[in-house]
Length: 400
Image (cartoon, rainbow, N blue to C red; front, side):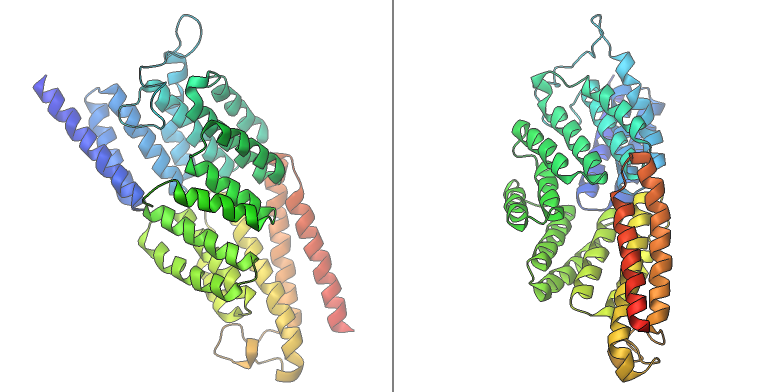
């Protein structure tokens, strides 16, 4: 018995160390520690310890954007649904179910089940899988959180529904769902951050700022991941508010900070924010260097991420084409942006850049069609077709 106690303490110590590394943005190190804890728990028959660490393994894999591997790691936990059924056909809640706000090492099997469902569906959204498959899993977990006592998990399911609505371009619907979730858990930062993001997408800067400030005041200390997200939002708020040089200053600080964390999604977001900030002040050569780094992240399981990166490449070439059209007549076809051969994009005429933009928008349209066939929407396709028409008009104008 003493040996079991000592061994379980060792497993918990590995788990706790993994959680610390995760909060610091050291996801690869966190994954290694969680796997060690899981192997130790599995090999010694400690079922609940194994379940907790399996959840951490799956969650960290998803954050590292190893989405299918993460879903496979979480899948055994979803079987807890049938294992926990009581005589009435409902999951048997533990003593912790109605008191713990978020999963911890003291949480019971029911909490692990609910948390696994939420991360599993989040990964499915990023791939994405079909709308019907996502709805099927969401409906399963919704049936488990109908009682008011499970408010935290109910709010997290609503958060996932809002994510789905946003991916389908239904930002107002997403906002309504998030407001319902906030009525349950008003201080939950992951809800406040999503409301801020929704308002940003809808162009309501005042509301975005309000919810960002609520997010910022919800915790006394920020993790390394929180610091990066905070800088990202501050830069985008400044940019949308026409303080473009301040936005660039913040984006450069974000670019430095993100080098200290191993979180692909944050890194990609930081590069995109800096790219947008550079493009906004017409620093096309420097924007191109950030775009080249972004392009190295295009090999991902997430079709959503591939679409975003291809779309940014298309935006860049369209912008470069317009800049060449303005400057080309004065500086000649062999001069780069701003007339300097050593500052990035050189030797491309406006026509060649338009051709590249058209090719990239066409590639983005194919990806958008695949995504939106799965999610039953078409807002991405409509946007890209509009941009392709604009390129055609610009090409005609340049030939006139």
